[in-house]
Image (cartoon, rainbow, N blue to C red):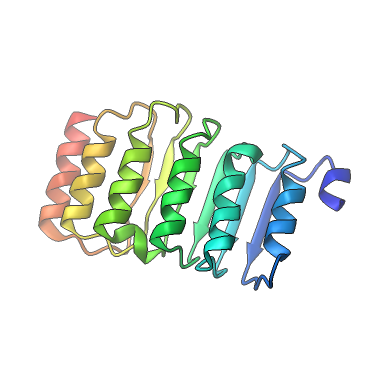
Length: 178
């Protein structure tokens, strides 16, 4: 109710929160009735419960955020898959930060994310941060292929990943092409 009544809140940050039972779904249900939240930050909250990850992911297209940051949230592959499906339907998204989510660095995780980044629907996406996601050279190659024809991305943060010379070569080719 408070979010519905407050017309000025555009940024919501949840850090180190523990969600019991239906607390997160209730919060996001309330947020769906207001399209004013433009920046959503969920930091160091455990979204490994499939219900919690699904609620956040399903809310993305309804909230129409410009910035979505899920940092150190312990996303599972199932949660990442659901998030990827929903991010693709969020053309307002300009910034995506999935840093410190190890499942992103798994082959299945980076393929899911690569498919989203190739989407023609993300016409406003300018920044992606995947710092400390355990990206290896293969993951960076997959990511570089996905971004090769992306005309809108202006910022890519891959700090804290150990992808070595092979990964750096993939990035060099991406920068030469894009």
